[in-house]
Image (cartoon, rainbow, N blue to C red; front, side, top):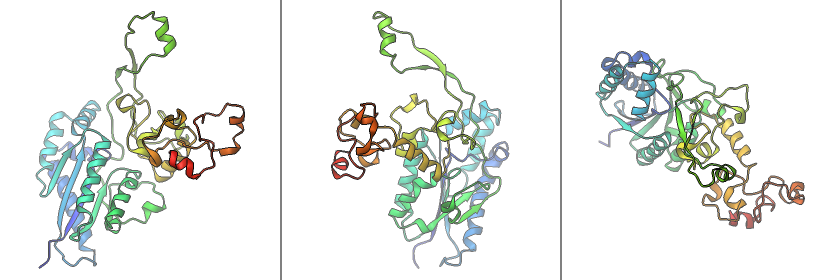
Amino acid sequence: MGQKQVALCVIDGTRSVFSTNYIAEGEGGGRKAGQEIVRGIADYLADASSLQDSTVKVSIAIYIMKARLRSDLVASNICAPEQFDKFFVGLDETPYLNIVEVSSKRGADKKIEEHLQLYAGLPQTVRVFFCGGNGSEYLSITPTLDACNAKDKLVILRSYNSPSNGTFSRIPSLMLVGLFMRNIPVAPATPFFDPSPFPVAEADELDGRTPSPRAYTLPQRQTVIDPTLPLYKQNPPPCNEYYLMQSCSKEGRCRYSHEYDLTADQLSTLATSAQQSPCWFLNNNRECPHGINCCWGHVCPFGVKCHYSLKDKCRFKGEGMHRPRGDLATLAYA
């Protein structure tokens, strides 16, 4: 006999949180949630006529910022600390289920990519069930699945109906109603000290004295885009670098949001908008370390016909930034 067939189930717990109905039941709720996942996948596979073997093992991996989620749920009065802890004790009893703790969404993205690279392309892997939020996260895994010829194995794991563009609507899905929350609750915003440098003028006024840190409050994290406002008018706007380059140079000091679940169309809009602002490196006549992966503009949108450049008022001031788009010299410099 050949190797046993396997169905992977990867859950991005930084963007999908189990329903309060399960968490409130503590250990019993954790066991129920695990059973719901296994039963739902088993029923889905039983209807798949293309499978050669009716018995398929289910391997589940959940990537989660456990400490932060615990803090947010408790601070939002959704559950008690003991309920949260006991829920994960029960969930951990699910056979072939692994809970992997990560420190950030970026960390989860990296671990999920590694997991898929290792297992999705194996011949014994018959399906890849993925759950990760409202849409934009699927863009990050499709190149990985493409690279290992496993894109046709993808099944989106859903807990509720959400708007999706044409690309996502064509992907097979498994609906487990009520298993995950529609919106992720977050703790109320708290004041913190701004570690960023003071402006030069302000430093001059201090006559060499050391300034005291300034305290202010970060905007409360939110995961839902206001559809009545453009992206740049969201409060706060989404971070270009985080969404388009999967990293943020500001790290914990970023004033823009890393918490939205953006659709493919919104990501495209964000990318187009970012290209209107010059890359800091090229604008200062330095080599850009990100090259073609940089989200910022390496060429002025108006190119050689830029009338602002003739008046020395264009923001694109670096050498070669007014070449025609696609110019080989520009690409080499980028």
